[in-house]
Amino acid sequence: LRDIDAELDADGGAWRNSFGEGALGVYAYKGVNYGVPWDMGMIGWWYNKALFEQAGINGTPATWTEFNDDVDKLKAAGITPISVGMGDKWPGMHMWAYLVTRLGGKANFEGALLRTGSFTDAPFVKAGEMLQSLVAKEPFQDGFLGATYGDEATAMGNAKVAMELMGQWAPAVQKDNSLDKLGIGDNLGWFPFPMVEGGAGDPNDAVGGGNGFAVGKNASDAAVDFVKFLTSKENQVRLAQINVAIPVVKGGEEGMTDPLMIALQQELAKAKYFQLYYDQALPPAMGSVINDTVQALFAGTMTPEEAAQAIEDSAKQELD
Image 1 (cartoon, helix red, strand yellow):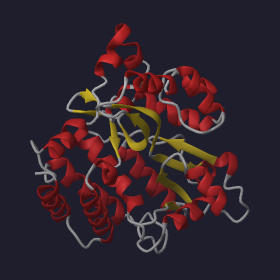
Image 2: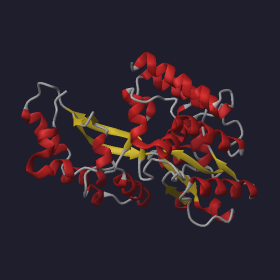
Image 3: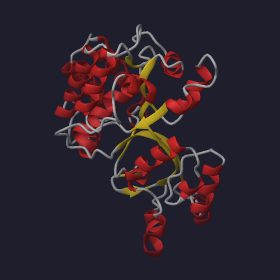
Image 4: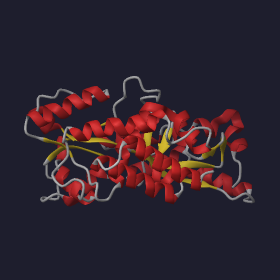
């Protein structure tokens, strides 16, 4: 691939500075950019405002402690707090990955990835402990270990649960899977994954994915110019206006009209570090191991230490 740092830094860094720092960083390796984002989305908590109100919850949780308190309030009110489809494995991976990100931040993941650190380092183990503490509260819908993502979305769309942790596509899937094909309408809200007290990660860091462009090593300058054109503010506004993408270029949000997506985009823009989904950021074999071990954490068939070691064993095979 072609190093495009020179083009990003030309004209006082005009092209580079048009992107959010976190989104652009996804397309860099060891500090060098080989591509740029075109659209990005992030995982966050979708919640039912009416059920929160029914449980006496005012506002949304800013910390992991507050989140757990809200889970307790929902259970006390007879409301299932969270829907998750662990039969598909990947939906629960987001929860563990966010806890790792909040606990360890960029340096932790990149250290393990580049092999200056390990997937057995403290944040990976602690995230498993925190996840299992949440599981012990029994906050999930009946049958969650065998449920699919479709089941997860159906429960949310039919107002059977208060929350699900999912990406920007969630509202559409909730509607499609609901009995009336309307979902929960104006009762749907969104909030970012809470900060973890004492964690080394920036609470604005995001976990998610997206699409972007890179050019081949021998590509012409015209190819880079075309990518620059595709990621101009004007084109990002157009994409937002027709609901094709969540813009990553500053000012692109001017084309957005959905309040929930605007809230998500505003949080995404704050991120100085964007953690790409683990099962995409890492080799496929490692991604499978991570999904399997997180499922085992939910099921209680592995300890946090065993899960971290299994991931590290896979890393030694795939990354060393």
